Amino acid sequence: MFQQSAGQDPIAQLHFMANQGFTAFEDNEMMNRPVALQEKMAHTMEERKLEMGVFVAHKIYWDSPSLASGDPQKREEFLEDIRKAVTVAKRVNATWMTVVPGHKDLRLSMGYQTAHVIESLRQAAAILEPHGLIMVLEPLNYRNHPGLFLTGSAQAYEICKAVGSPSCKILFDIYHQQIQEGNLIPNIEACWEEIAYFQLGDNPGRNEPTTGEINYLNVLKFIKGKGYSGILGMEHGNSKEGIPGEQAVIEAYKLVDPIS
Image (cartoon, rainbow, N blue to C red; front, side):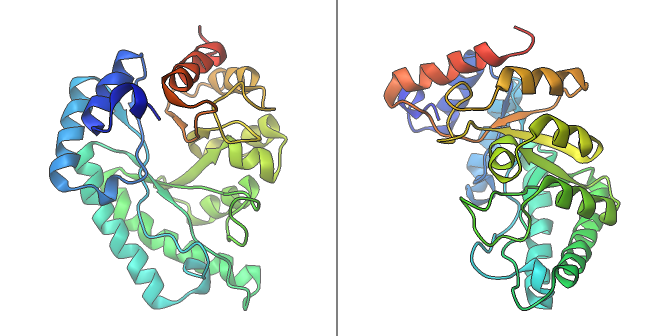
């Protein structure tokens, strides 16, 4: 997001973010980074008082069934990734990791698919609970990711309630849910007790707040008023190119900061 201003080195990027006043960092690709770089990034984040946000915890099947299918081999592959993610989370001082159950299995009714997903997540939660780690389920919209099993906030809420673990919660991505269901503030309110993490992005375009239709100042005021003090992940692109575009991202967040 800030590579034009900070360069390609992740360590330099972390310093740049901290210098701009950001207090957290998320990295979907952390699992795939060399161990030495993970350790160096963790040291830099600790030094600069940057909290580690989410990373993707497992291989995601975007176009074929995985957890929804009930396939024992796919389930074990997922659980093995979760075991590896525990090690990475400890190395980089992370609490949350993103989980996406993958594509629907069109050969099965949704009831069977839901039961398969719940069972896989219960077993994953048993791995995570002793370490105080949390997998956050991310519903994704039908337009960017057609055919996925998990799409809505109510569905994620139902699954988290069924799993019944403090290690299985919701990642509410405001961009995805604006497309999928809209009605943002009432839906956030309805599943509030199961939300552990937010991600941001405006629609259309999936760029920084203030570039689309979402009234981010009001949405963030609501989240702040509910007592949320966790991370707001900036999972979006930049609406403009180059250093001016990166500065525009920084200025956009100053505009929608409910405590500024």
